Image 1 (cartoon, rainbow, N blue to C red):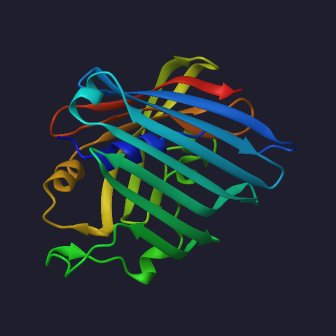
Image 2: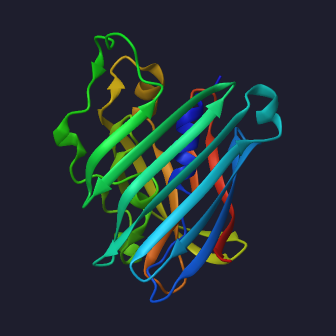
Length: 258
C-alpha cells in the first residue's frame, strides 16, 4: 500500500496560486492525483492575498479506485505575512486520516525560523537506532511545504534554487534544476510552463534505513511551474514522482482567479 503522507505532502506542494497584490485577491486551484495513469484522488485549494498577508487552505481526498484500496482524507493550511515581496509563514498545519488512523502537524514560524512544532500522535519509546533527529540548527531559514514553492523570479531562474522544507516531522531539501519548458493548459491558464527536475536530500527527521526514502533519493521528480498573470510569481501546475509502485502524478485542472 502506498504511504499516504508523501502523497498528501506532494499534493500540498502543488496547491497554491497566490501573487502579491495591492488589494485582496482570491484564487482557486484544483488537481487530479493519478497513480500509473489511474485517477486515485483529488485536491483543491483556496487562496486569499491581502496587502500584507496571505492565507491558503486545501483539502485532498481519495476517489475512484483509490477509495477502494485505501480511504485517505487530508487538510492543510498556512497563514503568514508578505515582507519585501517574500512570503513568510507564521503558522502551517497539516492533518490527515488514512484507513482510520490520524496524524497532524502544527508548526509556528517567524522570519523563516521554527518557533514551535507539535505533531500527533506523539511517538512513545526510544527512537530506532537509524533515526536522524531534527536539531535546532535545522529549523532556521526553512519554508513550509505550501509557501515554499511560490517562486518570485524570472522564468530562467525559477529552477535555480534549493527549497529547505519542514513539515513538522521531517526536514529535507528539494533541489531544483532547469529542464526546459513545456506547454500546459488548465481552466484559467494556457501557456508555457517552466520544467524543473528535483531531487530530494533528507536532512533530519527520517530513518536512514527507510526503503521508500532511499528509493526516492535516487529518483528524479518533475515539477512544472506556471506564471500567474503579471504578478511575477511562478506556482506549480504539475508533478511527476516515481514510486516503487509506479509514477504518481498531480495535474492541475484549474489554475487561476476565482
